[in-house]
Image (cartoon, rainbow, N blue to C red; front, side, top):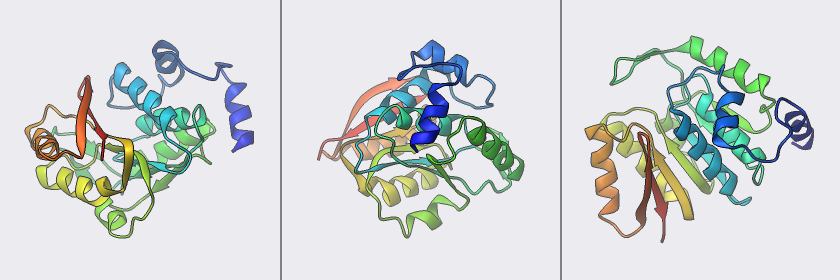
Length: 207
């Protein structure tokens, strides 16, 4: 981990923290489907994750969001980032096409940023991983199956491991399916809505 951090710090930006503009510039060549300000909130919140927990990403595509989380981890407490995505052939609710070719590009991207010891890619469905998951989670990023059933399953499987003061971030939260799950969660007193950044809704666990 220490070697990777030295390599990273001697790269394009010799810094212990990114501004939004510098982060966007640093990773601009990585293909992704997240806005500039969304990249930055992932990075910022990843920096806050305590050393006794980890970061979980559900839905990675080619690794742009994974890299934001990984860089935040390196500038924070150097926690592991588990990137869960089976990279099976799949057409998303917005018509996007995904598959195995995205996985090879994700590996290349992670390696090029020296994050191979930070980001742990898991090529299984979130359902399969969730059935055996036991680790505490400081930040949960949900951007996988955007159907109501898919989002609800991801929350139920992994949300119970989010630590007090930890975060859950939902991408594409303008979709009715995602909004419905968020509204159901907020009916309890376990989470509060802290902010909306682009298409991301951020919830914080308070109990």
